[in-house]
Picture (spheres, chains in turn cyan, green):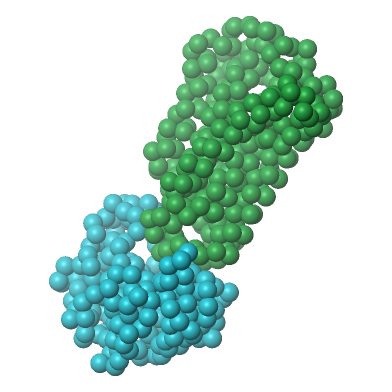
Amino acid sequence: MIEVKNVTKKFGSTLSLDNVSLTFEKNDYIALMGPNGAGKTTLIRLILGYYHPNVGEVLIDGLSPIKDRLKVLEHISFVPQLPPPIKLSLEELISYVCASAHIEKETIFHFAKEMELDLIPNLSKSFFKLSGGMKQKMLIAISLAKKSEIIIYDEPTANLDPKARDNFYRLLKENENGKISLFVSHRLDEIKDIVNRQIYMDLGKVLSDEKI
Amino acid sequence: MKNLSLIAYLDLRESIRARWFLVYSFVFGGLIALFFIAGVTESQVMGFSGLSRLLLMYIQVTIVILPIFILITTVRSISGDRDNHILEYMLSFPISLKQYYWGKIIGRFATVFLPVFFAMILALVIGVLKGAKIPWDILFLYCGLLFSLSSAFLGIAFFISSVVKSSEVALGLSFFVWIFLLAFIDIALISLMMQNRLSEELIISISLLNPMEIFRVAAISLFDPELTVMGPVAFYILDNIPQVVFVLFAIFYPIILGLGFAWLGFSIFSKTDLV
């Protein structure tokens, strides 16, 4: 369970989150929506333990993502909106992921195959030299291989072609049972089939939170 | 421990593939080759000859370019990863901040130290092939000094990288630190000395806080203190402090300084917003 309790986050004089309280439970598949600057990324980064809230607290299964970082992150998968320009080769990236998250290399290969990403010929290539779609598929494969209880996707299909999107949604459906899935998106129509809750944010506040 | 070594290894691999590493290695290896081609080992100026002269010249060039090389290549290590969202992704895995930060430092230390070290080994090998006498005492001293200078500037670079959120600002700050330690402190202290505002002992003590000054003086500490090439400050220090004590200070102080800055950087890195 994710509990966001009266969280306020400021950057200098800019208020990014204003006294936000939310609770996410198992089998909540959430579309987190809102315009740029609404506070969506700040909320995600607080859940991941990157930011220290000015007021309030965030708890993941009763644990602080800052103080109990390792325990909390064992249960979270995250895919950013834009794949970062990681200079490691795919092989090195896989070894980092496997060592830190204690997952089997074969599981990543399995989900990469499901996403129609052929890893073998690309293993020695730098991650940042792959095409946008390949990078996104790789990050999705890693996130699914982690088999986390919480998955956070920030515009996960932005770089994917229609077929890859279909594969992604199919894999999510197959693997999301009993989890918390948080999707940041600007287009509800794209994810409406895989979410059951919609949260709309603007100017650091939650404007609406409804089941769909 | 396994994650620490993995991060160090991955950082090392990543650095070795980078273009800056090729330039960096080429500069130091090329310096040695250039000295041999220019016949530095055959010439004799102010009492220095053979490999001793070559190593002294190498170390005097190194003192200027090694710190800035370390600063500009390392200072973007954390801040650059933060800028381009690499840190956001890599730290979404359950890896401790301690392992990530110190693993990066170890990997980067190997990257910056090994080329300068191997350039000295290259000088040694070419010198042996040419039948030159090997000055072992100078060689060991310079290895120690390069190790400690690398530690000091690596620590400072990681501190800047952790404190500053933007890699552009971090780069600017690293240039300032370099020029400040290279010239500004000396100019300020000479100015104070000429005006007799502070005692000579205090001015020399302040100059000894500067790792570059220590490196400069320690590099010539094995030579005859009567040689004019040393300059008044080096002469004063070596005349007042026993040689062994000064050499030990010159090796351990920059290491401690580097570790102190690196630890301070980690403390800030782990207690503030990560991205």
